[in-house]
Amino acid sequence: MNSLEIDKRLFIAIMPDKKTRDYLRDAIRVLTKYSRNLRFVNVEQLHMTLQFLGNNVTDESLEQIISRLKSIDTNGITIQMADLHFGFKGQTHPSVLFWEVEDNDKLKQLTKEVHTYVQELKLEDIKKQKDHSKLIHHITLARTKRTFSHNEVKKLMEKFNKDFTQEPPAFSPAEFVIMQSVFNKNGNVYKIIETFPL
Image (cartoon, rainbow, N blue to C red; front, side, top):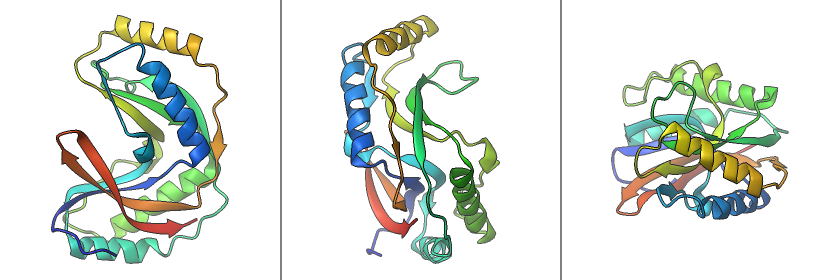
């Protein structure tokens, strides 16, 4: 593990393969024609979060988490891309454009193990998680620069669904990772801290 500054914003994630990134890149290119009020994630940094660890994770906690997650032995996961969504259920003012991923037993198992293993460490600086089974597996494509009305969201989705007709791909990840999020003037930049084979 690399030497890092104290107190990091960290999360555990799966990175899509090149074919899936290319698919999402093509989708983003179509979406940019419809709205200038979306701030898109860099294609190379697209990811699916399994667990957000916290904004101020210490090196000591990080070392314990890495050691614990090395015990996970899950393989043969297939991740199927599903549909594009604007905002999560129940949001009054949707602010995230994301591609939902179809749940399956092995993906749920991996998510449960990650959450359980981290929770068992009882670390003070780690964010307390809600029920892992309620997690919506997704890949965030963009965040809004301003509030969108429901009518604007509807029009954007209608245009996109008409113009983008590629079939959603599936991929089998070879690993999951711990990532660090660093904020700069251009938004969040993500850096892989540790990898765990699947």
